[in-house]
Length: 344
Image: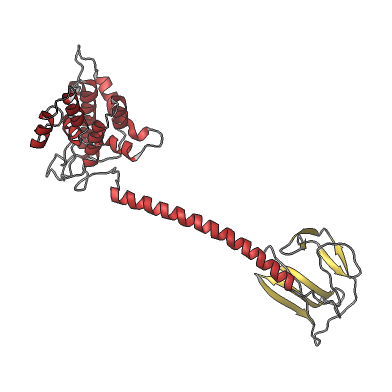
């Protein structure tokens, strides 16, 4: 009865009476200490001191949920949690570095005070009462000292003055709450606790996601290797382009003055998709050394591999007569699209 507050069953009596070893009593004590009923029984005294209840206390005394904190206390007793840790987690669990969910639940100690949703009350009056409740409970439970008198005046021989009472009041006056909770059940701030089934499912999904991400990374690496092989095979199968009957043919994988073109300005050579490529900064250009003239009634073809860095405007090719009102044409990129500008 001292350890679990439950009478032994007939089977437990028979087991104890039939155990004639010198350690029979010690084994019984160990079994009772390992029973979940030990924590349930011993926690009752703490729950009473901490004013635990399943209802809000005032007015209609509506139900609320504080059983997560109750179970935390029971588990703390069953796990033989050191008293200093038991104290810290209840008074300041949320201030610990990266607090766990259980450490946040432990701070429910200071959420056990009565609340009300009664209309017509003076809101600030009840909010102050909630704070005083925390002061009274904390001092009684951890200091073994009632401090209610210091709320109004000093006692000559009491260890706590009225000033010190309101210093404690200032400490506990940091919760964003109202006197009238305005809701049935738990008042804000609320800690939402997922169920064990939810946590198990969440962990299952995380494990599945990790597996899928690993498979995706492996598949991505495989596809990249296959893509590289395919690109090389396509290049190997390409026939070299013919330069017969071309007016100008310049690969542009290097920039030097040639028979066909002369660079004007700084043109940089940079790695391209297949081979090196010429990079233009918007001020440089290539001027043709070969005399040619395209007329509007003759078909012609211009071809180039380009990778524009912007949507334009960018001039790709121009043949204009500066001495005759810029007659001629140019090919440009405007808003990401090719456009032809013709003056005749």
